[in-house]
Length: 260
Image (tube, rainbow, N blue to C red):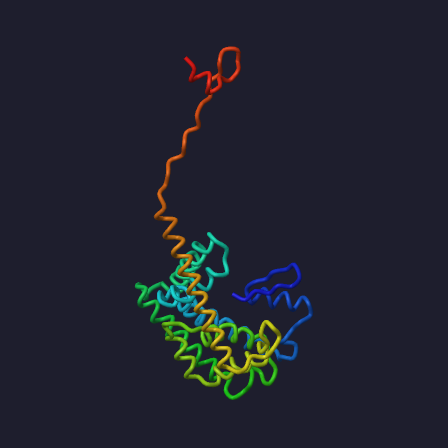
């Protein structure tokens, strides 16, 4: 999820971040009409209803994606031993959320639920593509709240290298949405940590590949440490030796106990 750090304040979740920014007098929707404001709310609801379940499934439930990308990625950013527990907890929470919101009749099996959420997600992507058209942003030449929301949903699907890429393949068939992501990445995320512009898309892809390799190595190390802990012999606790007091209330020394 996105996280905003402002001095000593840490805020997560898009809606809370936007409310915080509005209180600080930052409002990207200042020039929108009432109709455009209503459209913004409608499309945000569409994203959370139709696209979010498929995004959760892609990251947290699809076994290959979870084991090779999501789990090691998150585990590498969490201190041991929580790194062994938190990713699995988040995976279970994602599955429960999908089943609670999408698992009602007539969808009774997980396979049926999975098929439906991906149909909904592809339909949502098609609607976003049609709404964007040839414009740079959803409401003209200036980014708004809706652009931030859409980018936040699309960029992970578009850029992360997953083994199973069902949703990513559909997104890449919609060139205007891909161009939308590329434009925002180029305009607002073009600086590296050192403050210099990356030398093209190849550099960004190479850095992402190195990061993925590093995360996989850390994941393997964590799994080995976990196996070693499980296999290590468990010794029973030692009993403390009870010291007996000699006559007169003083401890008897070892030498006095050995003497005839």
